[in-house]
Amino acid sequence: MKWILAACWLLLWAGAPCAARTADPRVDVVFERWDTPTSPGCALAVVRNGALIYTKGYGTANLELNVPITPQTVFDIGSVSKQFTAMSVLLLVEDGKLSLDDDIHKFIPELPLYEAPITVRTMLHHLSGLRSYTDLFDLAGVPEIDQTTDDDALALIARQKTLNFPPGRQYLYSDTNYFLLALIVRRLSGETLREFARRRIFGPLGMSSTHFHDDHRMIVSRRAAGYAPGPNGGFEIDMSNFEELGDGSVMTTVEDLARWDRNFYVPVVGGKVAIDELQALGVRSDGSKTPYAMGLILDRYRGIPRVQHTGEWVGYRSSFLRFPLQKLSIIVLCNMVGDLDPFALSEHVADIFLNQSESVSVAPTSSELASDAGIYWNAQVFAYLRFVANAGTLELDAGDSLQKLKYIGRGEFQGQNSATRYVFHPGGASFTVQAIDDDSDPVLLERVTPASSQVPSQMPNLSQYAGTYYSDDLGVSWILEIRDAQLIRRQWMFPAQQLKPILPDIFTGDISEGTYALRFTRNAAGQVDGFAVATTMVRPLRFSRCEPASPHAGPLALACKIAAVPAAR
Image (cartoon, rainbow, N blue to C red; front, side, top):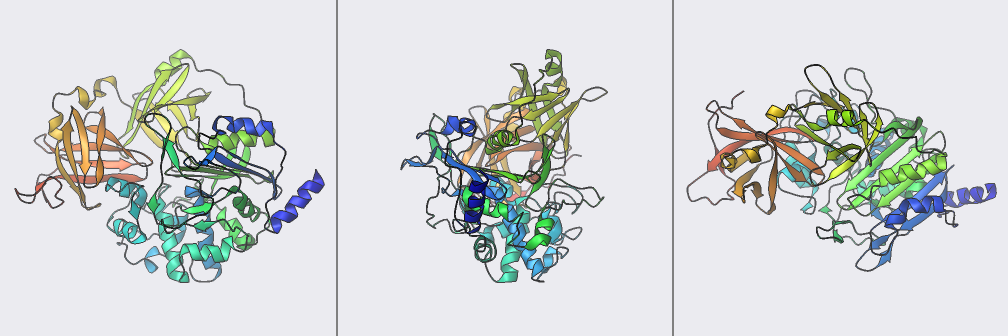
């Protein structure tokens, strides 16, 4: 076995793939459900001591052409791309072209002045407070399937006169940070991030199947199509024409990512200084550390130190786990959203190679489940969670489905396919749950009492919400109207969308990645005069109720006359 690993090490160093060819049924059974010619699936790479020790493809890369997934299949890896953007910035630091403590206005003067400086470092660690442009596009009526450019994104970001929070105060994941970092690379190097990364990172590491994808018309050899479950069974295509770089858009293979993985142990690109900086945790303004480094999350799995990041973009999902003490990495790239989750799959594979077994589960009591179930709400950030007791555990209402949670211990549950934990705190005047995720500071939600949990669908007058509302932050209007006793959001070139009632004056709707919450506001006379809307990466934005500019203006007119009625506090 040692001579096989040595030979693989040499081949990998030379840029050639090398992996175990003998099937490993322990691993293959993890992907068994997806390993069919009629389903999307995943590519897997297991790397140990710098060598590929197992690679395989499961399922189909292109259902129309019946092309199977192989270790050479190219996937969009979504936010796993961020570590390459971070390395590009660190290479410019190495070149002496910028400092991590430079104010971003030095490079992007188009942005408005904020209450405090935002530095390159705070953006790398998601401490900037900048609203995520991907969610802003959704709220503006531009879903991921549409074509957008750098200019479109920058114009929308520059409209935001305020931040989610003062820079450095909190940790909150935002795609805007890494998109702007890509612009900085372009403006300082004179090259697009695609060109810069090819010349400085991908080329030197022999990652010949890897690039930042900045042209939706570009033909990519061996690319997997992205898919989503169809509404009536089967699958439908789920892909995007976005052309922004930095926060995502790397297309690559599991074999090429193994070459990048080896750079963390034998640094060819960046050297030890950049590799250490890439894995240094962010520090809030109060001196406390975040779990986020630079394009990487540092945590522990079964008590073992781990470096990880996941990616989600349209019909693609990815997971990259590294266990540095064991020099073991698990790379899983998939081409479907839904219940195909590479993070959970990669942890199952890690258990095999770490010789870990699933801990003995302890079931929660029925009284505990009944106590924890309910609706929880955070009025400051519009966070909403609904837990249902079912089949001996809690299930989380994910909007269009219920997701079963894993019981960890007294008062604590975890998502089956995520690192998110939910810690319940009973007693006292309030009953709360703390949502602990690796892409934000913990969020505390309070359980809504039964008396105040009556939903608007039970109220007699949904028509009070109908009307046209305008947001200066987004530069768009929403038309809200009643259809079949439902409140509907309508915009130009945007599919009609149902707003689902959850609490009095509060509704939810879907965005490309997740949901948003909308809370109506009222004036002193009790009349609806607007609403605020928020996502996990965008704190509440104001929409004011407005009227058409003239009686002849059509229902989709964007010009609005803002009702001069002060909102009640």
